[in-house]
Image 1 (cartoon, rainbow, N blue to C red):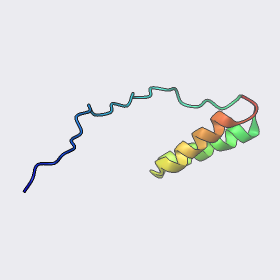
Image 2 (cartoon, rainbow, N blue to C red):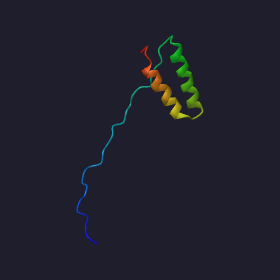
Image 3 (spheres, helix red, strand yellow):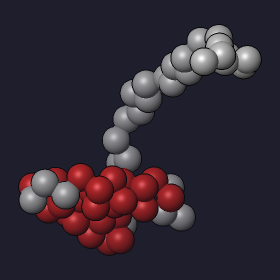
Image 4 (tube, rainbow, N blue to C red):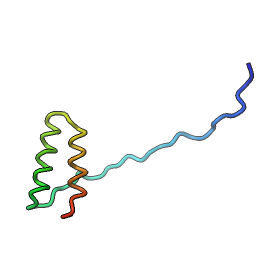
Length: 64
């Protein structure tokens, strides 16, 4: 058996850990309040994907 002719000697990629704060709903905004309640309900039932989706929607809401 022959030795490989090409080897990869690069260092592993290290991704930074994001320590961003949680998306805060705007006070008095009914849509933000609804999303915040939906996020809490999703967390309580263990649906972290849905909770993250709500956080993204809160962060992207046009009143912010």
